[in-house]
Amino acid sequence: MVMNAVGTRLRTRGRVSVGLLGLLVAASGALAACGDDADAPAANSSGVGSAAVAYPVTVTHKLGKVTLDKAPERVVALSDADLDALLLLGVQPVGIAASLDEGGITAWAKPKITGKPALLSAGDAGVNPEEIAKLNPDLVLAGGDYYIDQEYAKLSPLVPTTAYESGPFEDPWQVTLRQVAKLVGKVEQGETIIKDVEAKVAKVKADHPELVGKTFSLSQAFEAGTIGVLRSAEDTGVKSINEFGMTLAPEVAKLQGTDFAVTLSLEKLATVDADVVIVYCVEPGLKTALESNTLFKNLNAVKKGGYVPLTREQFSALRNPTPLTIPYFIDNVVPTIAKAATAGGK
Image 1 (spheres, rainbow, N blue to C red):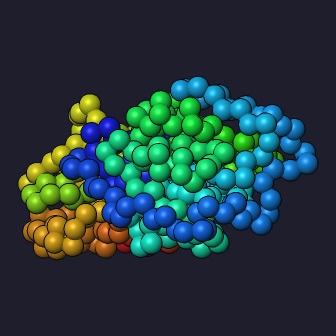
Image 2: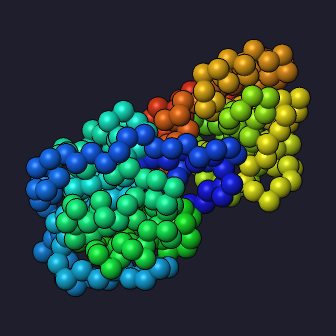
């Protein structure tokens, strides 16, 4: 899982996600102490660990390793990938890095949280290790945490802490899930989750054959007069849509640059034309301005009905793949893209 290193970073749950060019979007809200609930043992109704798992277990990562002598009871998750894996494995966290969503929890994770985890606010250097230590955790999950390079030196001496295996924000969601599953003693359940999510992705082509072979562009309007276009085949959002059978528009793929995104003036909007034009606008005013722009309205995709505007939540799910965001995007957005592909590809 790779992100555009110079991108706008929409911070969710203490890590950076969905980036394109621009300023860092600060996470709202400070640490929510959550009273006695934060101090109580995690309510893992399905149990952490299993009789089939023999502790101690060890996970080795790029910054070190984690060894647990027994199943953890108080777990803090510092990224969407870690939290979503933990929840799907039936384990409730005592603390999470807050997202920008209402209540500090994403729409896909909210239905699976039964307790009241402490919400940890991430600053420019990540979450304050002292605030994490107050929760008395026996494991911190940070395999998908963009800030772990800055947090690890202070955090790891206090509590066993995971990190990426490849690079910051680069591990596929499967890698992070396997880390979590091994440490909480649910390896077989983790493999079942991976198999189920991958099967759901593969099924999209069968359910929506109208997507196969269609071209698309994926962009973000983040400031007046420009648009950020995802040009790289290695971008998480581009890769996700490729898995549905679609291909990046040729003119977009030709764009040169050292980053995954290129900023274009609106005078060059013709570059993003494709069977389906997918755009996320960071503010309502930018969306209004873009949609009223004559050059945008004259794009073939827009005239035919191949334009798909994304909400922040939907864009976050697309560019922040986890075993919860992928099914969320497939269920809530793919049908809209399929309809646009039918219209725009005529």
